[in-house]
Length: 241
Ligand code: G3P
Ligand code: MG
Image (cartoon, rainbow, N blue to C red):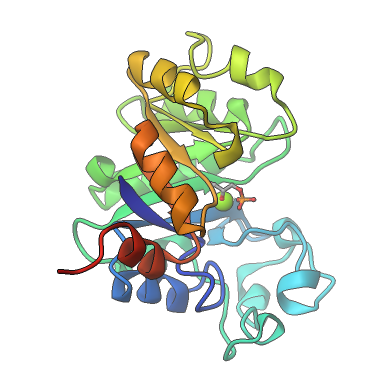
């Protein structure tokens, strides 16, 4: 089971920042999960929240705020870390080492994603990263757009724990063709994981910091574990000899 650092190693560095991704590398993660959205001037930025109250104590809406202004938001201090800034997706992709896996989550709750899926596909293609990137979303419309724009890129369908009906409809339906399914970890049962695997999909469970639960999921056949603490989980699962 491969370990993906959730928003970077976000227990030890401010989430979705260059610092958190460097920390994921340092802790020996196999890759990172990050959240991508469009900002007001059209660039793809790496940020989880639509508004910046929690992350920067600012009443700014990311999709309406231009990049020059967004760079001034300190998303480190409010979370108890040193000051840090929101990065562009391009900067993050540039900074990660070769072979590192990247799970780019498209954050968009609207029917019209404003070109997010197409832009992310362009960035991934331009950098030649198709082999080590999976692009996921809770929003199936984003995945449809991605499939149309860049069918060769791996798609992952996120399953919202509040929408358990999705477990029946998604993942095994040809209407939403994805290469992997990304359930909340509590939705993983041996039967479901086996069914997803039998349908040819990888399973990426989130977000698990408890080593015992990680061990159970590994034994179920989960392919990727998304965790805030990749170093500690790795050490607990496979203690260094
Ligand atoms: O991609 C897994 C996980 O990140 C989905 O939830 O809210 O942390 O982006 P969230
Ligand atoms: Mg995410």
